Length: 341
Image 1 (cartoon, rainbow, N blue to C red):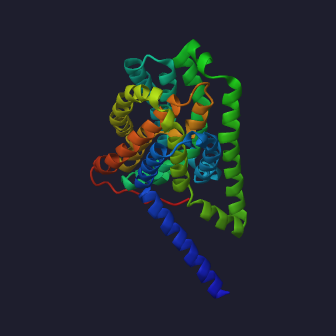
Image 2: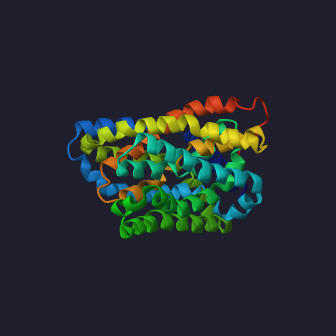
Image 3: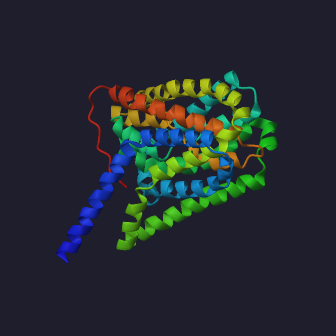
């Protein structure tokens, strides 16, 4: 019996170690996936047939992503009143103002505006926790508030799109496909993740299953990037001009958003680690989580997937910079260690 317990403990430690390695190296895993997918798409014919695999891959990715969000600890997030209030003000008041300004300045095409807003108005709820931890932010606070960020962005996205696109929103978003995509690719994975978390709390088998699935977010995200690239790249001709137009928006956003988050947090008297968390949250977006909503837009392929993946790549490069630069903001104030889910 003692040997069995020791074996289980060793297995858990190995899983956690592997998970840590995947999280720390995830940027390179994603870029590797994109590079391999590009070579496959350019050297193999018929890869557009992979388009049918995008939604199943997205569904699985979102399930294992949501599984890392502490849904049962929503009450804990609500107790972090000051931090949560500042996080909500930055992500759902100031960032929309920044996005509206950038979109109005750089873009005229309503389809491009729609794609950019879908990405930039949705704060990240998964790998931002890892990146913020590596950047000396208070990842525990950010982790606790991820359920709130997820719920609020799903409620606010339609409101923002209606306000900013106006009458054009009806031309690009049909209620039926949009609701279907939300239900099957966001709501269902979210409910399954919540049930899995509940099962893990009550069962040893459930806990072991949850730990194994905890290894999957990085590989699942890499798989989605691979499938999207090989399916869309052969059709990318019409989207090259679109990607060129949105890149200045993404780069400008990547520079300004963390500064806004940091400045507001410090003005509101948050300590340096908590302020770094707000900066990371402001800068990091939910690109692949909103991808199924973008794919529900009539005529979305190849333009919307192309500009969403472009944002992901710009963001991953930016995260490498943030982990070095934001980590220095506020000097040497002690950073709480991350508590794993």
